[in-house]
Structures are given as structure tokens and as C-alpha cells.
Image 1 (cartoon, helix red, strand yellow):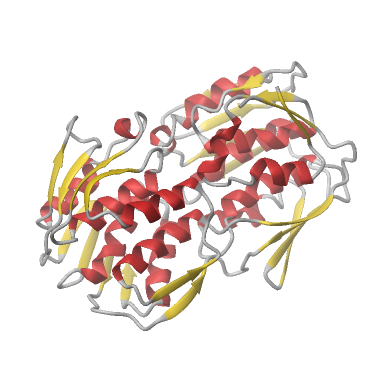
Image 2 (image 1 turned 180 degrees about the horizontal axis):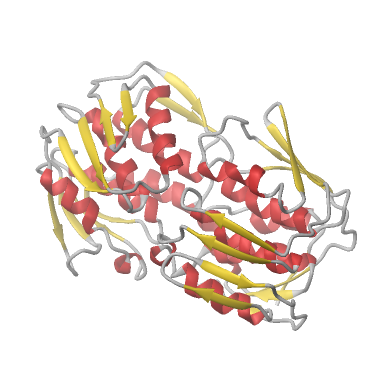
Length: 409
């Protein structure tokens, strides 16, 4: 569906919104619940990815199609590899079959897992025959997607002898690894992360408990962007969030201070206020630990008329699309000049074009949502707007509630 989006009539917005549970936390807890059924979960994400993960965990034999869900692909690969007697073909969309997974497969094979590539070497789909795994040591590169590492950490407590993971090189996306380990601790699983070594102990069962998923900080980024681009006095309250969040994207509160947004924590909510006009010329950030918010920040800078250099983005080319290439193409439609390399994006101080362009989304939910706040400054079209359901099905409804004028084209 193609949507036309333009700014609210009143650019001093006052609104409260309940955000869906974190996709990252939800998928981790769903896997732990499959291993330890005594766990209960509340405030699950209503995203496509979470639903795909739930369905996949229920399969014992046959095909498991995770569509575009990269997290599910990585987590389910480890899950099925150590489920004795389960035989599945783990597959996904055309794009998923282009996303490498050999690092994780090699690590699991070194532990004794039985995994074959059904089509192209190094890529899904995967034919997995679950086995009892007794080996307890594995090493893998540290500068890869943290989801590979989290995937191994999550199944580790169900292995006969637990798991010691040695990370070789400089570690990236540390907050996501720490999130995984903190959730293990929360359910009573002993673990440690010292230097480049992670240890997770084996456990046969955990105490029954109910875990509440925090709302998604990545989703909050789009409202930070709206507030940054809105008039002074704008205030948006979002629930439910923790000041001591496990999510790496909670760094938003600090980053957006520089972009004029004040964050106040109040019980289980955050209040975002447009506190000042931004006067800087350019913003430089290393987003190694929070690459998923790079698109939002780049669009915010475009709307504010400031440049930016965002580094630490080496995982973005292997996401739902090549996000660096896609961002260059779409930002330049609005008159920006953009330079990219394998791990960075530089936005030259832009002059925003007011032509009503059409933003392509490349089957990538974050492309649609990152550009949406730019409607505070100029109206435009969004192609294939339904991709937001991957992580945030209520996105357009929530944006409309802020006063944005959204019509089907």
C-alpha cells in the first residue's frame, strides 16, 4: 500500500502512546520459554517477527519458514540444532537466502551439530537434524552480528555441559549480548562475561516466574525524531520503559539531547520534550552498539538541516536490505548529498527539497518508519508502507494519532 503523509496542522504535539513490547526481548524470552516451559511472558511484541518465532518454536518436523525475520533465523538455527530428534528445513524469504549464516553454522558444527546447506553454501535454507550436544567450548569472530552470539548463549543452559564462548577480536553490539545474559540471570541461569570470554552454565529447569517485556526502544526512536523536528513545547509520553533498560537503543535518550530533546523517566514511562533549538552544524556518532537507530538519526539530521557522520554500521549491509545503499538513495531524493562506505554514512549539510518524492522501503520496516517523521518538514509518499508490521504493526495508527495526515494514494 502506498501512503501519502504530511505534517500535523498543530506542530506543537501533546500525546501519550503505549508502545508494543520489544521484539529483541520477546524473541529471546520465547526461546527460553521453549527450553524451560515454567516461564510465563507478559507484554509480548505484536510484531510479525515475534509471531514467526512463536510458530517456529512449535514445529518438530518439516519446513519452518521465517520469512524476513533475521532474529528468528539465527535463534532457531541454534535451537533446532540442539533439539534431539527434531528435523527441520529452516528457510525464509528471497532476501533471507542472501543473508550469510556460515559463522553460526560453523560454530554449531564445531560443537557437533548436524546442519547442511539446502541450496547455497553459507546461506539459508538449512537442513537441521537435532542432536544432543555435549561439547562445551566454541570460538567465533567478535565483530559479527551479536545475534549469532546471543543465539548460542540462549541455548547454552540446555546443553549437557553448558557453554564457553571465546570471541576473537573486537566485540561489537555489546549491549545486545549483555541484554541476553541479563535475561538469563533474571531466570536464574548462572553466566559471566569477562574480557572476550562468555560462560553460561547448564541447568535442567528454572523456577516458575513471569517476565514482563519492556517496550521497544527502537520504536521509540521515531517519536524522538518527531519531537526533534517539531515546535518548542511539543511533548510525547511513551510507555512502558525502564531507566535501567537492557536494550542498547536506550542510548537514544543521550543522543537526542544533542538534537534538542529532553527525556524524563516517570514510573514506567518516558516523557519526550522539545527543549531547545539545535544550532550545531554536524553530528558525529559511533553507533557500533546501536546500529538499528542509524536510519532514524540520519533522517532527523536531514530534517534539522544539519550534517552527520555515523560510523560503526558494518552490519547494516546484511540487514533486510543493504541499509547503507538504501539510505543514500532515499536521502538523496530529498536533496541531500550522502557518502557511504562499508561501515559509515556521511550526510553533507543538506538543503531539504520540498518535491513530493516517493520513499521506497526495500522490504525493510525501518526504512518506512525512519522517514515518516520527516513529514514534519515536507510531505511525501511511502511505497509498500505495510512493511512496518515486521516490528511495529500499529505504527501508522500511532502516527496518525499525533495529527499526521495519512491517506492511501
